[in-house]
Image 1 (tube, rainbow, N blue to C red):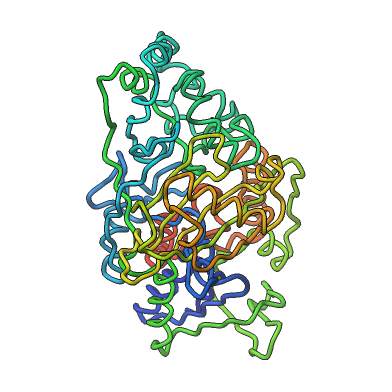
Image 2 (cartoon, rainbow, N blue to C red; image 1 turned 90 degrees about the vertical axis):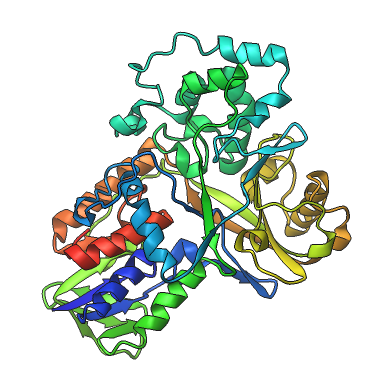
Amino acid sequence: MSRVIIGSCLACIIAAYELGKKGEQVTLIKHRGQWGAHFGGVDTCGVHYDAGMAIVELTSTNLEKKPDLKSYDLTVRNDVGRFFGTVESYIESYVPLSIIKQPECYYRGHWNKDFLLCNDFEVFQRMSPQERELVSSQLVDRSQEDWKHASQKIKRQNLHMIGNYKETSLYNHGEHVHHQLIEPFVRKLTGLGADAISSLYHRRLWSPLYYPETIKTAAEGTLDRFGDTVIHYPVKSSFKGFADVFLNLMRKMDNVDVILDPILAIDQNKKSITFDGDHIPVTYDQLAWGGNLFEGQRLLGVSGIKDAQSQRANLTFSFLVLDKKLITREFSILFVLDGNVPCYRVTNQSVCSGEEGNESRLIVEYNTDHLAQRGITSKEEVQVTTASTLIELGIIASHEAILRSDIKMIPQLLPLCHYHYNECSQANIELLKEKCPEVCLMGDASGISTRSFADNVVQGLKYSQCSEV
């Protein structure tokens, strides 16, 4: 059987590699984009960066010791959590991982253990006794039978059709916690607010949805931390390293062909693919698509549904190389909760990877529209803002610490997970499946919930074992 897998995401790369290991005839077509897709990163300032929030989170309450890959259901939110053990053991055999220094959050001028991702409640120590009493009083009489209660987020997979993140956050966290800790971060990330985000997909924005009982107990001072969230990162490497390892191994296989040319057309009747280049046409017995969903529809002759109400956030990244000796605070990831500080996250990727040397790679992340609301519109203004922000946060003492920097403003980058976006995506997936039932979708084409690092790995492994995802 001749298999063709189209797409540059990790799911496609792993699927092709695993099939190649079994001796099957496989063609992997990059088509467009970069290898690794979201996990391909950015080259600038003479070094490589992982773009955005690239981490491996392998903590889950529904972890199974030996889950059956055939049972993986990409339509069930967080079903991938059952396979975190599988993901960790598989990845470790190719690219070693290490546990990073625990992320932190900046609130009211103080560094704290992280509230958003790592379930630590040190931020409550920054509130007065009166405020903590207020938080506790706002969370009485919360019922787990209410659709807004966080206990419903796995059981009710249709929450995105019922309400938004602001509604569920107010119910589970109370007004004071929401407006102090949640809303400023979401607004700085999306350029809008929590009411623009689906109640079901809050975690894609690295925002929490705690049980109200948990927040109440934490505010009362009897709970310091909930759970043990562990974050991994490639040792002295980057996420691009995963794609590089598998691609290099595949290039040594005679039964695997890797094609870089973009596709011109797909003839489903002849099961043939032609290219916008010199490469000869390729035929297939089985086809998998892991690229952009709309691009897949176009090449396969499927009329897609456009939803003008869906929104995507415009993001700005400040890439920096700092003199390591002049960094005044060592950290991995800092979530910035204070609304008066314009960025929403700062990452020291050199600390995350544990690399040695005299320089450190940092990324400072902003929402472009949020910057514009502050009157910051040019790259030069962003550079000045970044330097002053790093000084305000206590990361550097002066501009002299910055050796090199680059600003990239990327429009329409982050999909805002609201009802319209999810329903439009799902409708287009169903259309493609109906018109082309023999085509398997994976990676970026498989749905809004299935683009995490772990989901990519599980999808690739399942396809190689089960022929379909």
